[in-house]
Amino acid sequence: MRIRPLEPKDISEVADLQVAAFLHDELFTWFDPELEKHPEELRRVRLARTRNRMEEVGCHGFVLEIDSEDGCAVDGKRIAGMTMWQREGNDELARRWQHDTLSKRLNRLLLWMEGTYEKYVVFSHTNKERLAHFFQVAHDEFDPILATLPSRWHLSALAVHPAFHRRGIGSQLLEHGLQFADEERVPVTLNASVAGRPLYEKSGFEVVKTCLIAESPELLGVLMVRSMAKTSHENE
Image (tube, rainbow, N blue to C red; front, side, top):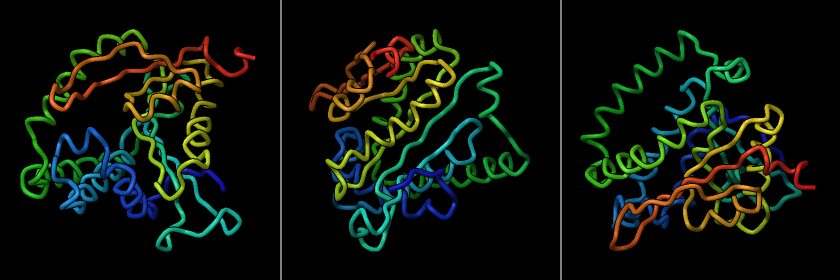
């Protein structure tokens, strides 16, 4: 196995991976209770989101790719997991990760125009009121805390194909990204699902805020932070 940066040629395969990983996710099924009936919409959402992320300033994606010694590929695909990280901050260390180009700016404009159309026409099954509610709650509850951590890494996505669960792939991808934070001595933040919390807690993350997104079924938003006091070399 090897971890490498996400490349444009990976986008389609990464979208397929995220469909497999998130099809039964509590948040995605709350946005669309009948998601299983039209997984192609989730694929379009993840495809668009990944394309947008690759053009955002300070955003960096990584994939874990399997080789012949690791086992068979799934449907001919060799990417077993992925992460998406965002470097926040205005300090010198942060700016090293925040390169922008004219090409990126033009691509962001084109993707914004495409996304505006898709939001109202293509993504017809997504409950837009629930989606807006989720982002509003996250903004109200989490942003004041995040504002106290101006320089940090944020893990915006971690997905592992179900065929490769229980092989330590999520841990490898997580630790790979945490190395950047350890080298720069900055905290790391993320929004966790209930299922993902044990993985993050093992790596030193702590729950700093929990908020209620929905009552029936109960859906919680969880903000976790890994401070510099929780780095691996300081825990030894």
